[in-house]
Image (cartoon, rainbow, N blue to C red; front, side):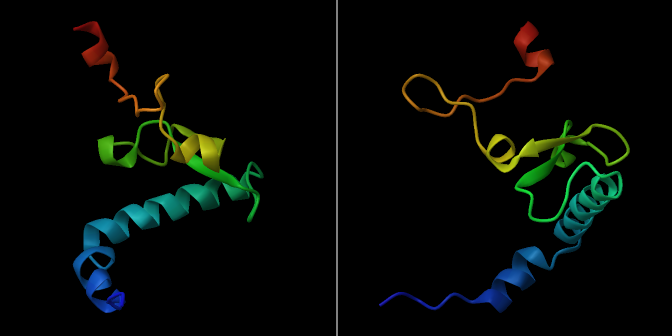
Length: 94
């Protein structure tokens, strides 16, 4: 029998932490900004993508684009269907 999931514990250890709440608020604000501009609508299957990810120092002020959920959430794959790691411009020069 499967163990019952402890949502309270998950929230306390991850979702409830200040840094996770801040990133979630930034993502929601980016979505609202593009909804207000008329570029996306609720339940349209589109995601608001940060060109420079929030985890890499991106902001909501610049670099927002609309992508399909599939484009935004999938990874590049090689011919054997393995994940291709993206390299930064700096790493590509090496």
